[in-house]
Length: 296
Length: 305
Image 1 (cartoon, each protein chain N blue to C red):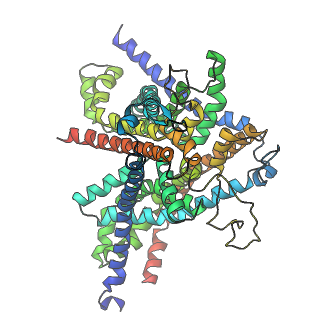
Image 2 (image 1 turned 180 degrees about the horizontal axis):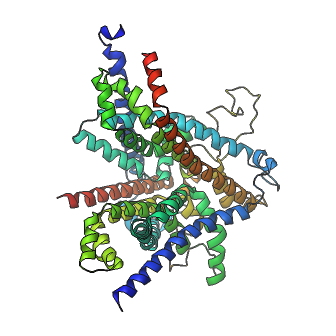
Image 3 (image 1 turned 180 degrees about the vertical axis):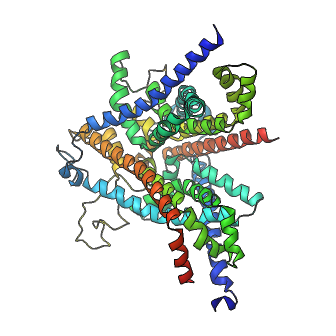
């Protein structure tokens, strides 16, 4: 009986449709709002506080509370870059090994044990990683090499464990997507399993692996607390792997609440946040470029 | 060296590395549990933290974490589901869609501290709320929205086309098909995704330092709901468990700060384990429920219409 009535399209289609469309556009709105708010705050150090752009980007001196304040961000940019690149260098070979293992050596152990283990590693909160770093790594390094123990290498190791699941799962998907025929063709030519993996499978999955590495790099670059807890936060360029340094995220977590809104110091910190945002955006563009390169 | 030998050696290396990673997780769990031994003590779990003396608890922090989790899920699940539905069913291929996807990717890769600072600008300063629970919940919503959207979108896309077409063929509109056919079928996957997201929400800290604050007022359930002391008031500062660990580590002056941090870390670890196992368990259970009870579901739908 109800079926004979004309369908009320407002009730049964348009309202729901508009609601979900609003949700979809909400994401766009929020993303744009974040970029606009952070950037408008970030450029205030140049428009209001008249910090020269050159000093911000190329000066190694960060002394915001001196009588002649200096706002050079080089230490933090270098610190962040070193620690995240180091983490990726440590993490990538192991992640690749896991990806190969899951797909070709022992799929049973891979899906039953390794994948859940990786999921759990993703789930561990970053403060817990930081805490582990402080209680295990830092005392260990203090004993081995003297000094404070808080160091660049401690940050690298903690981060490398945090980004391992990211790289491994994306690389594993990429390696799993390589057509089986490649493997068989390689076997048919008389190669061993390792030869097939190292010379055919991994090169064929290059694009996906690269995406995983960049995503891992992005995650490492943006990670705040775990790194801040183990890296020492001394505002100077590191003299080696065992010396403490500071990162963009670290200085933001520590100093933002110590400064008054509108002061040059505060504005400079917002500029650091803007730099962080722009760099993470850069990583996204890089991933897109990697994705498109293969399609042509 | 012979190719065979090389092959054997590398196979061995891969085995060793894989077992090492599994061992690493085991080592972490055991270390945290040993360092934080005794974390299940009720006096610790429900006790008030102390600023100067030994023996403080984490009661308010634990409550704040759980409350924050519920609040965040209430906000982010409808939004994520809506956006997921839009992307899976309504969005048309083209410039606009690829722009939305770029936005989602950008949002997903935002460092959590940047989101926290955005929260400081908007939810703390612009609205004039100060450090609040709701501000924190909104900040973590931003962090989790891209992930939830992706989960919902893939879950909906995974529902077989034939099922949707059957519903559309019976004269249902697209929206009716979604609500009555597609979403119920996609529910197990969505729920698993939500539980995993819950684990991440529970562990988030960097975005909360500047939105939910580093302090908790003395909570009193008999106070007025609008008062900052009422536990359920969403406009009060709320230090969560993760932030508490960070604070203890960086500026803790309590003599047993290390121990409290270790015990709190153990509690967090257990919660994360529970969320992960829960997600697995629920997904198996729901899958069985939804595939086993098809007939009753259909009958219900018939009666309902």
